[in-house]
Image 1 (spheres, rainbow, N blue to C red):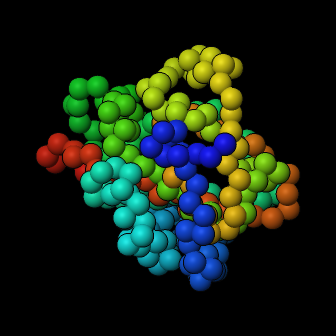
Image 2: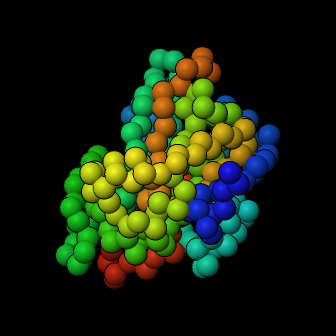
Length: 223
């Protein structure tokens, strides 16, 4: 199945990163690095020069503008790395929370939680519709080592409760998204997606960048 972002909410862009960019990330970013051990896997663009460069790369910003229809800004940067020692299964879900600088009374926003001193909140689906996630793969990922699985066009269902997610998965056909090192996977954050444990012995590293052109109320900022 050829996935198209406009129709399916997900798309693979091949050879999106240069071999040099892949090398810079793999040489600098590691779950064992002091920056991640002390500060976690989030806000990568502030911890690593290679990620900061990618987050402002002209080609990436152009893709953001093309998919959203307007210039967007980086609102979250995360790093994932599946290895034989650090391996996990991710059940079917939607990425439906955002991080803001403070809690506020915003109609339709909630529930609110605080993790690592950062406010997390579930916004209305209209906010998620103004976001695009770009997953930059610095290692190959296929069905054997934990590539992403998606249900195309499921972002159109809106925000789902857990039982609704289970029902949607049962009646839908899941599609794997195998990628090569340097490929990018574009997706709506609230598309239904999952991943299996890796059965391989190599890394499966992903730089996960979220962008949005949604205008927040005065005094509220993306964390």
